[in-house]
Image 1 (cartoon, rainbow, N blue to C red):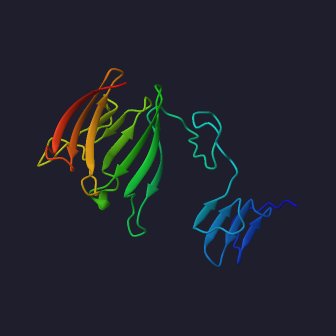
Image 2: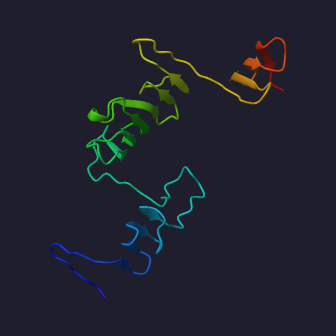
Amino acid sequence: TSATITGSATITGDLTVDTSTLKVDSSNNRVGIGTTSPVSALEIASDEDLTDFTSTTRGALTISNTDYNSGDYQSIDFRYNTSSGPNARVAAKHTGSGSYLSFGTSNNYATGVTNEAMVIDYLGKVGIGTITPVDGLEVDAGGTGSASAGVTATTTVTDGNAHFRLKNDAHEWKLLLNGAQSDKFMIRDQTNT
């Protein structure tokens, strides 16, 4: 049976569409798509398994932009209900070259998202503090105040190793902090075999 509603409609109690296509659980204020018993504010239950990550097959959730303009973002925003703007964001940007995935943060909630803190570009390069990474991983702490650009490797295991590795097809260089040896700090060249 079909129903057409023109204008507003108020429904008291649960709403079920086609068994489990859509379920509104009014007693717990939850919405389920593909499930009759959602366990969070929104739950999508689907058997849309991806057997190949790099394919055109879609997953359980698709966010579409109906008005494509190169450089525009599609985003998922996070906020407290007391703030008017978003406090953090995950967004996809589509360009003529390919897609980017950006992560935004805020250092001033009143002005919303203030930093495009991390970007993964269409080649898989990661930029932290920069939106145009040149290398596989680029960290830019900016040029003001006491900013420090660095990568930290930490282990909490007694006498554990923390290291940074540079590797190509012929050599492997390790910058190593070795907690078990008396020569605690080493730069080691090891030929790959």
